[in-house]
Length: 337
Ligand SMILES: NC(=O)c1ccc[n+]([C@@H]2O[C@H](COP(=O)([O-])OP(=O)(O)OC[C@H]3O[C@@H](n4cnc5c(N)ncnc54)[C@H](O)[C@@H]3O)[C@@H](O)[C@H]2O)c1
Image (cartoon, rainbow, N blue to C red; front, side, top):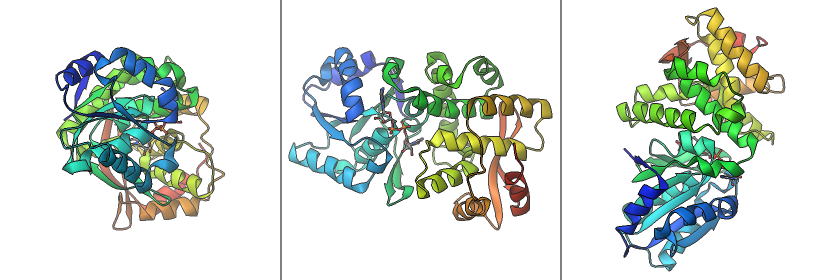
C-alpha cells in the first residue's frame, strides 16, 4: 500500500535521495496553479525536470504516455529516478502508468490536486489509459511510494470539480460510514469537496477497503456503488458529445442503485434522494434507456444475463455482488425519480 504523507514529509524523503534524478509530471493548469505551491513547500524538487501534458481526459492516451517516456529517455532517467505526479486524476493515472512501467517501475509519488484525485484516483494503486473512445482499457495495479494530500491546492479548483469529487465522497460515506454521511448532509457538495476532514475520512475508508482487497476480487467492488448505471450514462454522454464529468454520471447511478436497494429503509432512501435531487441534475430523459442497457450489457460487471450491482442495506452499509434482472433494471430506469 502507498503511504500517506504531507508535503513536508515528501521533502524529507526526497532530500535523502539527492543523487536521484527527479521529474514532475503535470498539466498546464497544475503548472500554473499548483507548481508554485509545491516548490514553496518541497525544496528537494527545485532542480526537478518538468514534463507537461495537455489538460483533460482526451489526453489520457498512449501517445501522451509515449511522449513522457521519450522525455525521460532523452533526459537520461534511470531506474532509480523519482517520478512526481502533480494534478488531477488524468495526471495521476498517466503518471501512475509511467511509474509502473518505465524501467519496469520507478519510485512514484502522487500529489493529487483535485478533490476526485485526492479521495479516489490517487488512492489504491490503479492507473489506466484510454484507448480510442473507450476509457481505462489498459492499466496497472501498482502502488506508488506515497500520496501527499494537501487541500491548499483546492483553493484554485473550479467549483464544478469540487462537486464532482464530492460525489465520490458521498458515495464513500453511503457505503461505509453512516455518521460521516449525516455530517456531510449539513453541507453543500461544493463545501464537502473542499472539506479537509471529510477528505481525510474518505481517504481512510478507501484505503481500508483497498487494503482488504487490493486486486478487486471482493470488498473493493463496494467502491463501484452507483457506477454500473453511472458508467453507462458516462459512455453515452461521451458518444453524443455531452459535457459530463464522471461524478455527474455516478450521482445519477447512485440514485437508481438506491431505488434498487430493496432492504434499505424508505425514510433513509428519501433522505439521500432529497439531497441528491436538490444539488445535482439527475434527469435521465435525455438518454435512451435501451442504449444505456446496451452499455450495461457490455459492462464487465454483468454476468449470465443478470446485472451485478452494489446495493445499500442502509446508509453506511453496502453489499456487493447483488444480481439484478433485466426486467427490474428496465422498470427502475423507466421510473422517474
Ligand atoms: N485510478 C483510479 O483509481 C481512478 C479513480 C477515479 C478516477 N480516475 C480517473 O481520474 C480522471 C478524472 O480526474 P479529475 O476529475 O481530477 O480530472 P482532471 O485531472 O482532468 O482534472 C480536472 C480539471 O481540473 C484542473 N485542475 C487540477 N487541479 C487543479 C487545481 N488545483 N486548480 C485548478 N485547476 C486544477 C485540471 O487541469 C483539469 O482541467 C479520469 O480519467 C478517471 O478515469 C482514476
